Image (cartoon, rainbow, N blue to C red):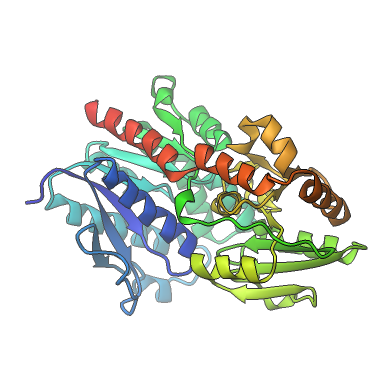
Length: 398
């Protein structure tokens, strides 16, 4: 039998390298501050290369929930049975794995929860912390373009209404809930019974700032912009940037790191595909990157506030950023936000962004160091991990 570890349910997804990196980094950093944590790394592709995840921390288990019912039950009115069956199989699989271990707590990123998830939470006697990275119901509604029960496949209605009912029940039973933004936390608090509301905490995303170098770029009258993205989701808002570029009179160059649709090709845009941290650093130096672009269309995911990792990456490199949403950390420091971030609410105007950066470049000679220093003090992983560790320790005391 294992000693009493905390188990993080790490649902590995090769299409979301940013999430994988974030979760793995969090687990490793929590161990450094004395939290006895391991990961139950669940992967669905038997050929996955997981060599970068050491076995001593990451217990790797293969699981594929897709069964015969998905092939049989294609009828839009019966498709909910597929989801129910796969969810049931998944949560029973996790419980079977954990049942052989003496664990003190489970941590899981919040996903689509249903009656099977509620069964799991009850079986482990509520010894769980949920991490919330979005408002699940709103994101699903927008992503799946849900209008009514009659006009949508039954599996969509099943997921949405299960989330409303059993999602709340799971959160009520949990030891703690950690949200990455105030907006998500406020939404969660409204869902909980009054006596359970103090279990909701905010810990925004952090990054290992000490592992990222900053470089002061040269200026040659062309504004070079960087947009880091993981998957090709519309909430990144690449289309909004491209539309603004069409109407700009300035010299502009955009570098998009990550997946992107072919139809978004543009002569002034370079799509690099996926790059690791070292490759991004090389791209920034080679191409004189001046600014980083945040997510330009979070409203498409039903959000107005976030703490994206890519923005923390930009700041760690000393890059000024462009935003059109409420950033959990930046918005707490109005003077820094005003000085080193370009914020807009309505239409994006890259001519204004160009003039703003040029003014910053020539009038704030130490801007790179100032941004880097702010990032270390406010969004560094060490800062966030301390907050998270305190929540875990308090949950263990209950």
